[in-house]
Image 1 (tube, rainbow, N blue to C red):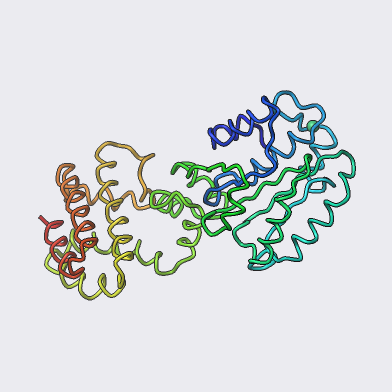
Image 2 (cartoon, rainbow, N blue to C red):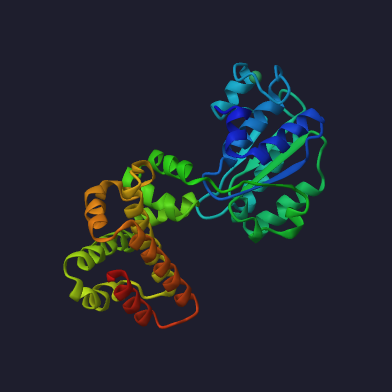
Length: 328
Ligand SMILES: [Zn+2]
């Protein structure tokens, strides 16, 4: 159960636009909610539907208590239809089924609402069907198409929808959502620092390659700290074999940057900002080798390395140079 106040906190612009449509009494026939996973598209769609059906609505706010509101919460409102991918895609039959449902007028009112989740996963046939459906809007129908990547949808469908862009989540919210999805607190912090896309973060969490990046960064720091003359050996024998592509190299350097940021956080006693909070002791040890100033210097050198990798400088060369710089 969500309220507009909560949705406004999460997605100020999209929530305001939808609320305004009640104020002006101008509800569109079709909306396209576009934004990465976890940005609140489903919750917003359910709230909007509730506001449409609730007889006790005040402004845009549904009462949350009446029969209509409760049936939407429990997922069995007769005039609200959810369409979700059946396996990998949304098939033509699912849209045909929807259309059939709509040939009857609303069971209890004249209003009908349908929500298509992952609308970009419609097959070509399904898309064409839906397009026909959108082309003959009945006055009382509202469609909400939800998508992570609207670019792959038919232009003809997009152009018939009012577009609502859902903004990426801030790191604190990504972290909270990840923990809710069962990701450990320490991984959630690291992932949220690297991406604001919940789907990508969850994939990385499952990815063994990524789990090893974290380990390698910690090992690299230990080598630099305790066995400085083995630094290059470590880079050539452990680090490089793990990072075969440039995007992977960048990811590794991103994590390394977070480590040096934490060294600075340690100096500032900013535990709440620390990403490697479960490694706090190691970070504090690192702070004995790297002063705050030299940690900042390391950060700028890592950024420089990232730029060089983008400019196609040989990765081995970049990493060897960086290792020497970090030791200084
Ligand atoms: Zn209600």
